[in-house]
Length: 357
Ligand SMILES: C[S@@+](CC[C@H](N)C(=O)[O-])C[C@H]1O[C@@H](n2cnc3c(N)ncnc32)[C@H](O)[C@@H]1O
Image (cartoon, rainbow, N blue to C red; front, top):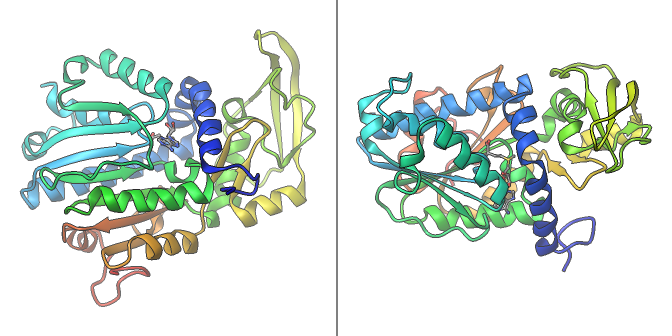
């Protein structure tokens, strides 16, 4: 049975995407996660939110927590929270957090991503923590093990990981996998982009990072879109940039300049279709989905029924940095409502759509 519009099965999509992530690991890290200012703002928002949730659980509720990052990529959270245990002073040095956050585990299907994570952890002086408090495992996000009740499992998938998990069939399976993972008493949190933000955020974002993920399908001409060339945009297009063109410098795969200042423009019809569908496609095999708020809501209803679940727009928590995002929480601990209430995102009289189920 096919899993998406291309007619490929989920297994074929996994194989395709596995190849994509193996190939793009270093540039993805450099140009997107640690590069594009709007992505940096979004990941900073996620980290701040996670810091506060961990503090709420560990310091205020006195719970021991095990953080589990699914689709952990190059170990962003391992690096962030590993600093708690190195003895070096850092802005996170909070005694309850350092003692009650027990472990940061991560799972990813890309060996290259995990290798990058190990190298970064070693460079940050955390090598001795790898294998004890910082765990990295290669595997499938669709086959998550049921997490033990203690320490409290907090399972997260950040930075639109669900949007690159092999299309709607993969995303749906992932929501089911999360439920199984935390059913013994934990919390799952999915942070992803919303389709509603594609026009303002996604078009410019993918245009200005096409050296990582390939020329977006809505840009013409496609003269240098093939594997033989690398097109390097000259600057990052920020949110709400309405310019329908972008200039790139073109190189061959040996790094020799081919053409300077090559101008690409949006095909209005394809750009419109992308905005409507939230389906980002490039001339390489890379694709990303920015799912609509209603779509995430449907998967929550389908896979998380009968449990407490909360669905928020990122702007409810942080109007600037969270603007393109949406957040889905699944809670078997009974602790998330108190946290969201503290953040002003949950008025018990008027729970946001989807909460609690
Ligand atoms: C958008 S990156 C996010 C990385 C990281 N969560 C962060 O916030 O920096 C998505 C990651 O998900 C991984 N991934 C995609 N599909 C997967 C699957 N089916 N199983 C496991 N990992 C997957 C990719 O290898 C990639 O590292």
